[in-house]
Image 1 (tube, rainbow, N blue to C red):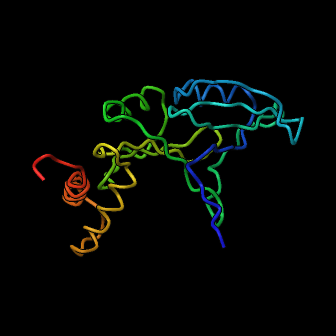
Image 2: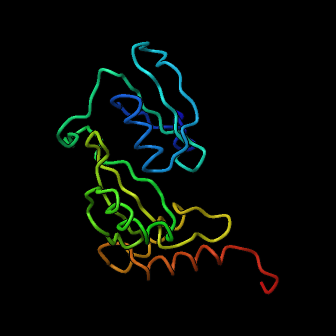
Length: 184
């Protein structure tokens, strides 16, 4: 039986409150251009806002002017969304704490994830948001996923608990060695 092969993330749609709360957060705080809107074609009582998270894909928000932000964090139980992570450059990452503090947004502080750094905070509706920055660039023709898969194999072989810089360096070296060279 054939797989239903995906070719990447197309979009994520979240339940928002009112239109302006969504625009203020997604464009005003996270800098995602508001690119278009239309009615929710399955429920005409809801708006459907479209934002570009920076890679040309889409983040969409269903809105309704009667909905307001809850006064509690979004539920994180089995089957529920835990968080959404967005990529930021290292130069932006180095300024996140200062910029979040300037807006009065409570956050986790910096988190070292071995292969990336990240900061967590909640959107106005209580959903957990992560801003993450890889600590490496993949070699030409490879993706971050290629490097992470190779680094995982190196980490497992070494018996280490989590991917770190030494595993990434070896993985990048291995992947780079697959490129043709005249000295071969």
